[in-house]
Every structure is written in structure tokens, then in C-alpha cells.
Length: 234
Image (cartoon, rainbow, N blue to C red; front, side, top):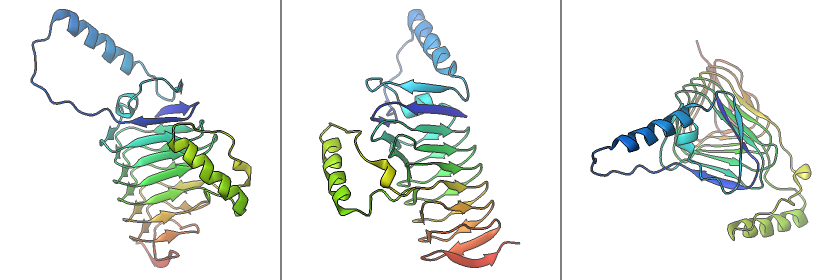
């Protein structure tokens, strides 16, 4: 497991692959490559490394224990948050830390499909050998207050962030949030929404297009909007 601590507002991407004709490698270049590889491999598992705003960091180089396609992103909108990713995962979606205490943890050998979003203000914990299809949203908070004046302020904060001037004065205390847990060997179908406070038990299946608002017991199939019991898995 490798951890990344996000101290400031930051947006990280995957380093693109550059295809070019191989050139003869000089001895000095070989030495530089060896030093760089050793530096990357020196990151200890479970280490928490603070990242400054001006640091050039690529997701696939930092989390070198898993695999990422070119569309993966990590955003910390207001500064703060932690991302943890286990070994041998394939990730094609994005991570949004939407508060200073947000945390996203992914176990080993887990797949996250394209255009899936994990949005955390509290905690999202995903176990081992989990399959999450494309176009899902997993969100542990309500995003905005029920107070319309606070929502007006949120619009202004979003515009400031879009213009490159992120602010930290959002009032997170008035936004409902609760942790999400997805246990080992769960299968989440395409286009599923999982909302705050939900626990999905081990080995369960969520049908495509479902909206999950309540806990799902282990070894069951749930589907629909809102998701409801379909059958017990044998």
C-alpha cells in the first residue's frame, strides 16, 4: 500500500507515454536511469509523503505498484486529503478530494472503470478484488448545504477555482457526510451511484444503473433506484 498526502490544492495526472525511435544509450545515461529507478523504488510502502503545490508528480510514477490509463486524475480542490492504493490495481477513473479530511483507500487487485468518480470529504474505503464498472459515482457527502445562501457562495468558490485561484474558506461543517465502505470481492455494475454512509458487504453485486442509499448485506444482489434486494447469492 502506498499513501499520498495532499497538503495544498493540486491536480495530478498520469505521465503520457512517448513513443520514439530508440537511441543508443550512453554509459552516463545508463547511470542516470539507474539512479532515477532506485529513487522511485525507494518509496516505502505505507509511507505518507507531503506534496508541495509546485511539485511535478505523475500518478503512475508515484503509485508504481498499480496500473493507470491516461485519463486518471487526482484533484484536491481545497487542499488536504489522503489517497492510498494497493498493489496490482487497474484504475481508469478519477479521484476528487473535496475537503481537508477526505480519504480514499483502495485495496489490492481492484478494478475501477473509465469515467468513474470517487468523491471524498470523509472516507471511501474499497477492499480487495473489487470490480467497479464504468460511469459510476461514489460520493461520501452531499456536496452542498441545504442553505441557499451557502450554495451561492459555493458557486463563487467554484468559479475562483476554475480561474486558478482556489480558496479554502468553504464551510465544510454544514455539509452532510458519512463514510462509505465497499468490502472485498464486490461487483458494482455500470452507471451505479453509491451515496454517503453506505456499506456494501463482501461478494455482493449491484445491478447497473442502481442508486445505493442504504447498506447492502454480504452475498446478495441489489438493483434499482433506490437499490433494493433482488436475491441471495448461493
